[in-house]
Length: 75
Length: 350
Image (tube, rainbow over all chains, first blue to last red; front, side, top):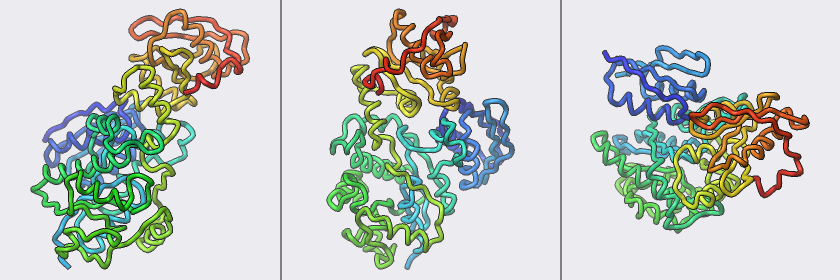
């Protein structure tokens, strides 16, 4: 199982979603991707994208100006 | 009716493409969505920047629509390729800098390419939510065949909401879809769409007044043209077009303009650009963050400082301290008297 980190700081939605989508396409089922972003829009957009593609949000943390969303790649 | 066919739908996040997909789903067609990000899209991030939209739900409407429909949505970054569409539109611009017909052709063409790249997933045709007469330039009866031909989609491009006003496409002729169950909507009247939405149980959908693109907005377009004129070049980067969506734009001299935040949300957003642009804000009074785009001479720093002071809480003070930071250099502080409201000529506002 891979664990990767994606820096999407300062990118405005939908770019963090696009970066997440493209990175997840390179990963396998069960892999974890930690996306770090600063656009609050990502808090709804990345989970929405994950739900429609069958991926799971493991954790979503807001700390200061940064938001960290961890996605577990679905089947 | 066969139910083994698959379509890819152009999803904008608005009602029409949402309806078009559901019409196909009603006929047993499996649909996936595709959404293109040009950089000019009116989407959730602008809500995220400004304070006044804090009460609005921050959502990407295309993703939201996809979730309501139960379809996958693929969002494609076309920022670089879109430059040629905007700069050299074969069919010209609409009332502002909106190259709507070229844009539609481009997007359908990209969908054709995407279908080819994903051939293993077996998409048979493309659908859009276009309605004849809905948009003054790109959605006319005479432009519909132009989009189909110039995109390369030809008769694999189906518009479920207005198909009955057009020649039958291959999916209709081959019986993949039942033409009798498609629609003949036309014109700017939205009542048929609203009625169909009600029938499908859609009661929450985005209805952006100017469509889904900033280029249809007069104010945005004039800022874009100003940027090109000031630089004597029509080249642009993503940051340039993002910054046109934010703040007051004031050009006191031909060589530089100031982008001044209108609220705390925009100030925070502009802070992210302080490593790339000269920035200034009042340190003695609460006030907005501002950045300078272009080439400012040292001798114009006091003018810029007096302007940014004018938009802060020290606007009536005799003296305001303003910090000016040139990237990679230590900040400088200058004392300034805020410029009088009457001394900001209307023509400075971009």
